[in-house]
Length: 183
View 1 (tube, rainbow, N blue to C red):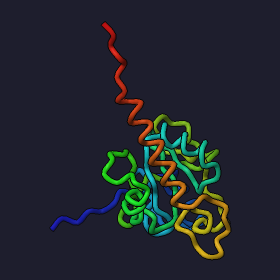
View 2 (cartoon, rainbow, N blue to C red):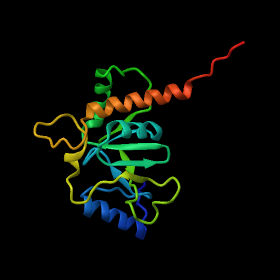
View 3 (cartoon, rainbow, N blue to C red):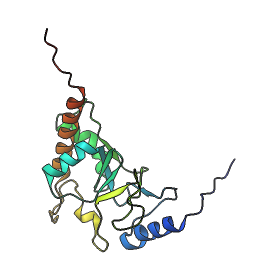
């Protein structure tokens, strides 16, 4: 049986890991690139960036939002990814091909470079569009299923999933629309 030893972290990865682990209290996983395990402190709704930007315009306040290439990642409360298929069915989006996925326990996302850090200007690098705030309890501000006594800063998971499904479907229709041919 072969034993895999992770590569040592570079100084920039070490500083990045330290920011996530000590400033936010989030676990990290060795890369490169540095990874953030999902399903512990948060889950992720992942969708095309074009649909994600439309969701942000529609919904307004959300939890942290990351962008990597052409994919947007909306951080939601831990446990939300497991609710996604049932919510899509309940919202009558079940069985429709949407480019919308949930990352929960066992998943990982590339750790975005915090705003103002060097490397955030690299093409294709994961970046925060709406970064998490150190010292603020992230879990209480993430969209999730309704909780009695919640602070209401972020939209509910149902509202966010409904907007995401609608925008993913609109994007799909736009991409597959064929011009009419007149003869």
